[in-house]
Image (tube, rainbow, N blue to C red):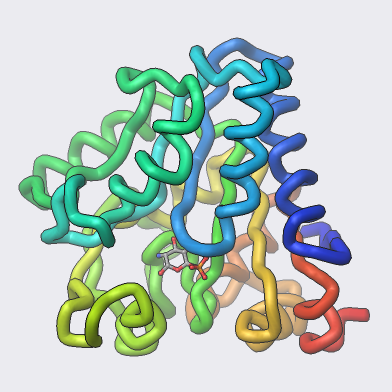
Length: 243
Ligand code: GLP
């Protein structure tokens, strides 16, 4: 697990975009594992810019999203499908038929089986992960089984509180969600976890405090993935005492 510190979030986003785009040069149809949230905004801005200038062509790339709120359909502004559409897919030339996203309004059993079948057949080439303040990745909350495949989960109270900033109030935050499993993350060829700002310093500090994978800190599973990187900005690195 390699730590990379960038002066700003913007520089970090550029670096991560370059890693994804280099996968396009190795094969025409790489599978990208994609996240939602404030952490990926710079990355998706880079993708949009590169598509517009012709520096990148995503028309054959395939994507699978990490997670989704259970109960929010794709037209709900707080659904992750909506986020992906507006922050990435409508701004680039990814093709609809190449995108795998949970349907948050769909049947949990059917949706889980559909994403699981896809990931059983396909290995993710490059994945971007954000991290929750409690160390969750995707929606794999503390104490998640390391051998899990796509499934639905009860969200931790800390996650509900943290994500309430996107809703009118805490009671509107869905209590359950879909997520790809820890096993799907470990099988990925290249994993980049990004975290910016002092608010994530505690989780990242815990991550670098130990080189074991601890189920109480889901992001520590990166210790089991040789080609994994943690990309942070200087503000976080200093707050976490990493430099
Ligand atoms: C959310 C999502 C994750 C996301 C993380 C960080 O709860 N489940 O997929 O990566 O928390 O979000 P943000 O980037 O907004 O801090």
